[in-house]
Image (cartoon, rainbow, N blue to C red; front, top):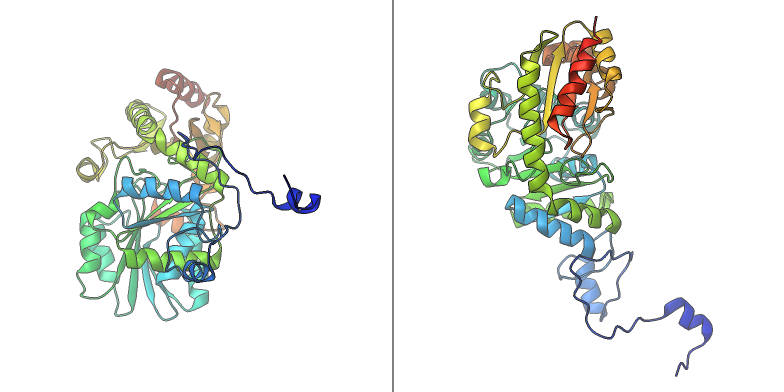
Length: 401
């Protein structure tokens, strides 16, 4: 018998389930806020002292399930999920840097990261040093030479976007701890995925992913993640995330958890296809250079073999000619799609210098120093049959005069 008015029942009906459900898949908890039993518990949740659910910008059961799974895969002390990879990167940096601090990063990284570090951080009084991590024979020494008294963060990517440079994770983690003070090491591991490498297990403090790529794996979400090596660092980053607001939606958390379930299967196929295609391209007369760590000709091949389970699905190469020839190639592809981003089931191709690492983010001089030529093509190798991909690449290369 319902003794409440219609309006109350309609607006605030409490669902009574016949038994405690035990779903095989984590449900989507599409609730912005959660009921708490007492004011004391609500206070503890608001101050992040208690465990539980308070507000989805703080935490959400669906998102937490994805974070727990990713944290176990990475071997961290805590993982936070974000609304994009850039939300994760910006939050990690703003949580650990203050006015007067100094950060060291490579000149060639993802263009959004470069813009944040080179142009936005200095607006907040943060000093920046950009090192040439691509051409130097000793990347770790380049980082070491750039460290100052006020250095607080060493930032890297491996494999690096787009040049596929490999950073020695153990040496990088060791370097951050070698100065006798708190220098935080951060690595964007998006190109590898947690299946291929785990920077935290090598001594790195923070690992970052754009989960829009391999972890999501289907080109249908925008998401990011940070895994921290210590509870203290995880707490600091999470507190910053709550205020900046870059939280992941429960719907995307659900899709991300689905992607994690098949990550190992997909990465093996991505890597096998990419290795086959890199070898094919290496011997093609209209290709001058192939950048793929699985090739013995790659300058960091031995290091990649040491710290990576597979070599991943990303590669880039230079066609003979320049921008016109690279454009002809990508526009002639039929199976591989002309699009930015990476890590999905579909193979994607781009002309790097005009699609991701554009003049807005990198000057022509910076691109020249970093080896990003107008003839450089990047391909995210998908899950198609490798013979179909090679046929597609062959016919597109034949279109180049």
